[in-house]
Image (cartoon, rainbow, N blue to C red; front, side):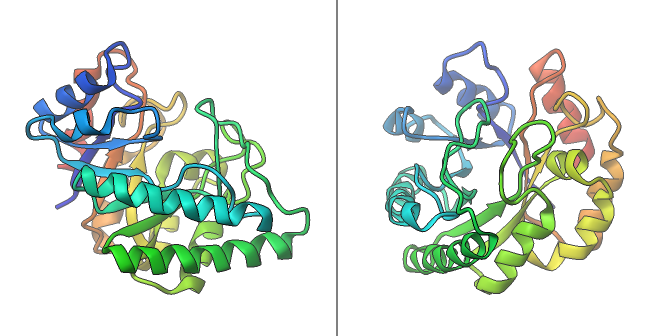
Length: 257
């Protein structure tokens, strides 16, 4: 069985953040959150019944440029402390700071070799910190065609190769189905190719980044492909509801339950 979670940054957006978490919890889902620095962590931790599936696991800096690594790792340690307050053991990582609007605002080395080597070494240190604190990090790829121009890990394979080279159970692949479809398509084959590295899944339909069942993706086949590779981890609705958020949550549950 998948562990179903909903991103509080993309649903019930007309409500204060704590109320979004309450609504998601009331509907029977775990909760994911993006950046936490502007959130009242103590208030979130005190919400009755709230179960936090994943949070962003860094603050700023960059693993794609040598000058940004120390700031990035400092943010990793701060994020792990927040995760512990929320009783959350899963943290999401990208190559560096991204604005709320999706703009890449972290440094990226000009030479590809420097970027890849720096990212590898930094992620080895992230895995060591994760081991020390008994948490797991998940490396995410993001599409550059619509949402995140300039991001250095545009394809699932880019993130997968880094995870594979670090070779730690504390660093796994986050497969974002929406970003995969936008960037490269062939989602089922991507799941088959990297199933052994997979630890986290984000979902939204294309076009529109709404809930499953509103676009071109056959999400029931996607769910089956995940089961075929033996995946039983978190599946997170990271989508903006097409209309009614409660309907979006029901559609999500129907596909992945």
